[in-house]
Every structure is written in structure tokens, then in C-alpha cells.
Length: 132
Image (tube, rainbow, N blue to C red; front, side):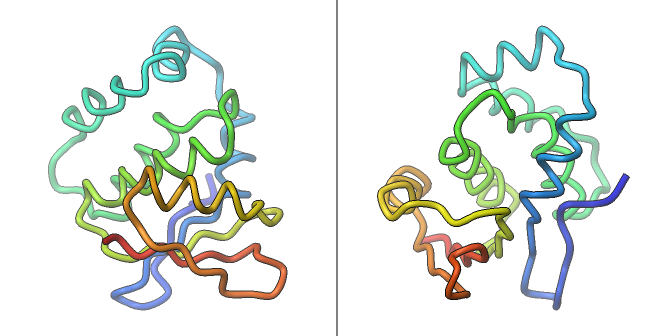
């Protein structure tokens, strides 16, 4: 499977949300997935069960596939993604989107995820989130 997290340099983790959406469509929905969509706090339990010896990038990749869901909004998925990144001690995350988000969505993401989001391209499809 193609990875949706990559390192463009040692300090820059990139998450390709388009690849995540594609990979998620190929996964079967389980009862655990339904619970995670209904109970966001369930993601905390999931993160504590990750195997040891994995890189931060690998952990973020696995957690994103298990915690994020195509059944919830992009805004909520990105808030969860940024919380996961913070839990993995990732201070900055570049996010590639298939489409631009609205300004109100970005404000909500910044507020709920505790980060600063900057558009890196004119179309707004590449974001940089810096954890505050």
C-alpha cells in the first residue's frame, strides 16, 4: 500500500490526505471503526496500544488509518490527525489535500487542534500546521 506519510526532510513530515482517503475506501468498516466515529475519545485508547520500535512516521500512518474515518468530516479528521501528530511529538506537519478547505474550517482546526495553519499554495491544497 502506498504511504500517506512521508519525510521530505528530517524535520518535515508530510501527510497526503488524498492517499489516506483512497486507502480508507479499500478498508472494511468494523465495529471498532464505528465506535471511533461515535466516540472521539476512543482514539486515546487506540494510541496506547501501538507497537514499540516504530518511527513517528509509521505510527502516524497506522493511527491515521485506524482513527480517521471517511464517515466524519474532513475538519474533524484533520483535527484528529493533528492531535495524533502532537502525541507523536511532531511539531510541524504538511498536509496535502485534494481540494481547499473553507476559511471557517481552517479556523476551527486551529482552535480545536491547538495549532497554526498556513496555506502553502494559492489553491489552498497544501497546508502547514505548526503545533503551538
